[in-house]
Image 1 (cartoon, chains in turn orange, brown):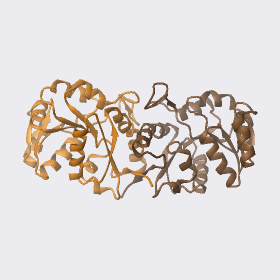
Image 2 (cartoon, chains in turn orange, red):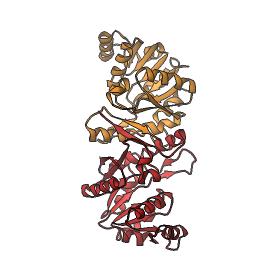
Image 3 (cartoon, chains in turn blue, brown):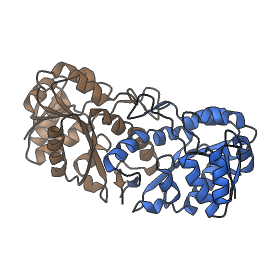
Image 4 (cartoon, rainbow over the protein chains, first blue to last red):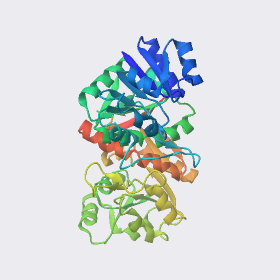
Length: 212
Length: 212
């Protein structure tokens, strides 16, 4: 599959390298095409490098791995390149400007995923994977047991395709929380994630939904 | 132990009846002492009935089972009765006035537990149990596996006493998230709880924190 990965940080580098290793045709996009991190990705992995617009145009499925507090600015100009495509939003709207713990820049009655969906009405936004660390996103077996990842989005077909993709990464417990407004629930897990990271001393953890 | 339970709704009734069954000296408090629900509790279980002030004065450990959107009003007059005591806050600041899903009346940069702690500076507020249904609070074995409950609070000794009490209810996985500000993380789990309740069709569920 042709995959675009927007963002050159730890999350983008980790998932894009894995997608190349799985045999996908991956282009990472940066703000500028000559960005060192995107060129480094291409030379290390054999993936492709481009701008945000290039990577958005390249992918049949596109991952938003930009920093949550800059995602809207990065994505809102890409409505043409992302029209009719699935955008998997793994970003979190964390604001560290007041120190630890970070708070969310949007929450409770709205979410980053909803903001992105409103900015890109012809794109199928699916919130997923934002509740785990990048290394766990692409290798869920780092955490033992049948732990859970969530999907939220308005289009059932797109959520099905994302779930298929998640299974290809090794995810076994996938819960569809509902339409894109349910991304509020997934994003509001981050305050717990941040606390658990402090308490457990590792990012290799996740939650499992348990029921009879 | 002498236990006060503030609130006569489903959560208060469920936990108070269990505490009586475990042999504790329990008084349930209502807004008015002649409230039918509190009198019903006393006649059904052999527990005691009183006002909020009576139950707060009675308990060595007091449970806030009032509705989250009314907790502050109910508790702020009880500073004398609750001085030096542990108040276990199981309430959630849910607002259903805009329909489903409910939003939180306080979140992100503050929490109900912090508001209560500020209103009762000489009380040891410990947030706990708010992330599960009342039936699961007092019988965690309704959900299979080693699923998790959290505690948040400023006083380590009080959190230890609450953890002992939780173990007496059958809880095995208890995570101390930190000071009372970490109650934000526990309260912001409610949007996920509400979504999962809709998806799973049962309130008998919980999350387990999984790590290597």
